[in-house]
Image 1 (cartoon, rainbow, N blue to C red):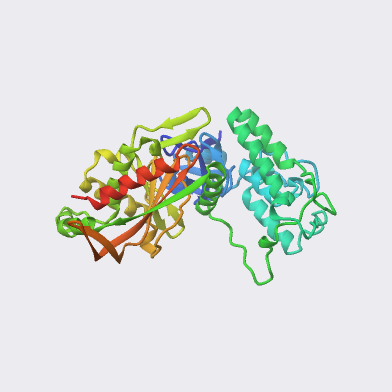
Image 2 (cartoon, helix red, strand yellow):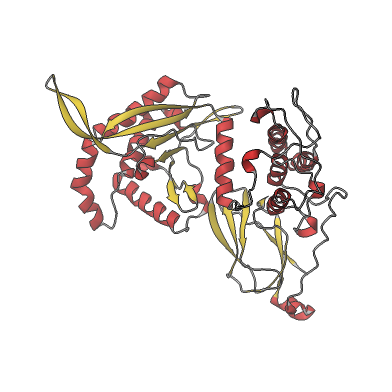
Amino acid sequence: MALEFKMPKLGESVTEGTIGRWLKQPGEELEQYEPMLEVTTDKVDTEVSAPINGTLLEILVPEGETVAVGTVIARLADSDEVASTGASNGATPAASAAPAQGGPANKAPISPAVARLAAEHAIDLRQVPGTGAGGRISKKDIEAFVAARKAGQASSAQPAAATTSPDATPDSTLATAATREVEAELHQALQSGPEALAQADAAAAMKQPQPASGDTLSTAQPQAPAAATLGPDDELVPLSPMRRAIADHMVRSKRTAPHVTTVMEADLSRVVAHRERHKGDFERQGVKLTFTPYFVQAVVAGLQAVPIVNASFGDDGIVMHQRLNIGVAVAIPDGLIVPVIKDADEKSLLGLARAVNDLAERARSRRLQADDTQGGTFTITNHGVSGSLFAMPIINQPQSAILGVGAMQKRVVVVSENGLDALAIRPMCYLSLTFDHRLIDGATADSFLGQVKRTLEQFQ
């Protein structure tokens, strides 16, 4: 009897995972504890090992698909069963035939991500051959269908493209309207439980968009946005799971929260002097002292002075977080990842420096665990490392604010000493705080940022 292999729970607060890459294929032998696949959770890639010695019989969830923890993603056979049934020759069950284009509706389950992607490209899923188990349609199937359609290979399978009036704006196209409608239905279903979500998935994916008022259309289906047209010399690069997660998260954050940014300038003279005096002591303890721990400590002081910035906006009210868990953005080749320093208020400068060193090193070597990126209540992004002076970063939902730290530059400023003004050269940097205006007002944001500024300028 085949063993069902389920999506593992890779962290305390992790509820779903994305199949990043299958390291084994159906028919291949497995050794216990040997890596079998990579799972992406909130931009962290984790290798999942085989639980038994045996054979991978069938892959049920293809690469790129996101499923809930506990979902069956593969079927395995242990070595004893393989030997007794003669399955050691690598034979695997034949996959169900893909539905013919234009045929009846696909009965296989459809994920919310697939439904959204199909709506974005105005695709009738009845015309997409599913390559997954039982004819299941994956993101890769949608992307392949879009590429084929643009190359003219699927012209006979798609109805004639719609034409919009010359005055039509991007917001008036059916693809955008359909996407908003599907997103709303799926969000509502997510709040109602798994049964409602399953029904919404199927309904949203098969929904035929209706023309919006004022649109001029020649057919029922819209043309894909011009910006996405694939030219003869262009290349379609599939989105990695991490890049797709970043894209989804950024769009969701901007749609969810009204973003406002306030900016202040900080004199880092005392921070620079303190670091110069103590970096040798830190190095002797095996710790590299960067400027990041100073900013974390200043943020802790700000959050303690203005607790509402350490809160989240919820449907039933404002959630006031009691722990100060500070996320620190780290740039890696695939994008940006935010490991979290838990209980930052309980750590000294040395403890913060150790945590920053450890998380940054493990992020760059792709050794972070799912829990390392969970539970953050505030985020710091040091965009100044690439030379940027100031920026307006996007809030890391469901947090309420994010601090951007600009490049430190020596500038001529006016200083007052003993009641006299004078010109001085000081190491300065811009601090930009982007906040959720639903629960933080401008004066409150300035109060928080002012405390961060004072902590840095008065550092002892």
